[in-house]
Image (tube, rainbow, N blue to C red; front, side, top):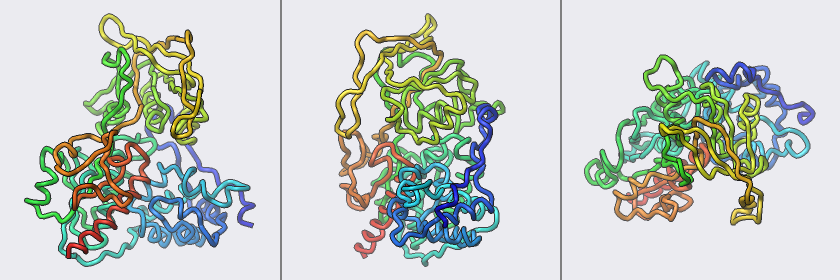
Length: 462
């Protein structure tokens, strides 16, 4: 019986070794391991894994191809619905999506769908390009703002359907959060991100970098002067949040966005690059999401003694279990039920410590999570020479401010329906620009829905 086979473990770098380098932590499956793991799939009549995948990858079909040893066929199945399989196989929260819905997981461990997707993507890149059917050109131009996961997914589908697609990226490298936000040890930039963007370009998508929509060009000019029939906004959420506590302006205080961007996009962690970043000795990371784990593990690799401070318990940590597990293995410390109230500075204006207060969980909030409340008289200090704030991000308001008829909500996110239709005709949006900071795969799902809506919209114009 397939469900009697134990889940095939994934080989990883030794924690003590990887804590001092930026090489990828997980090695992934080899061919033999992938076939064995794929053979565990029960091939349910009603595959709940597909329904739980935001981009609706045909999971049983590609797994069946892997089990049969036909890896290129598996790659072709995935390519029908996903433009970034090597990325998704590495950073998607499979445990709460496809794998979390796997029926095998009820009584045993679920099929390692993410690791199999990664294997297929890596194998196909090493052994030849998968075949993707592309429709003839239809004469319509579509602009995509942002080259992150939402923008790339939208552009890929539209190009596949015959549209002339141009992506406008504000930074000097395409990829969005894949390039600047996720560390090299989780998502290799050249071997994975650049390679998968090359696949999107191979569909005919053009990517123009160093273009700030709202400054270099506007949404209006894309319609009126450049002849685009529709615009998709997938500009992400890159505006960091802070706590507004005393001391946040001290030297040595970073937003996680700045810290990760300097390391990931500007290679500041490398000794041979002239973009240095502070190598702090004692680092406090405030927050408990995946970005907090990325910042903590990066600071650790730069030689820091790192403590994550989080105001709830470990049970409520929003970060992936795998990321928390890896962080602990590598030596990151966790201080739960604690919340900063002040960052302390020395006479030169540099961080010297952080003052926190103990918390306890009170009544549930609107989302059902128990709200943390301070414990009176429980303040304590932590020595630190750097503090990294990983408290979430909001969309940059530039595009909304420079585009008439484009509404935002109280959080600064663009208002759009489930298909990405905004309040401005011909303008669509999706991903973090609409939802606020979320996951790569949810952004991709939004990009795909918007692409379908754009297709319907343009055909309606005809």
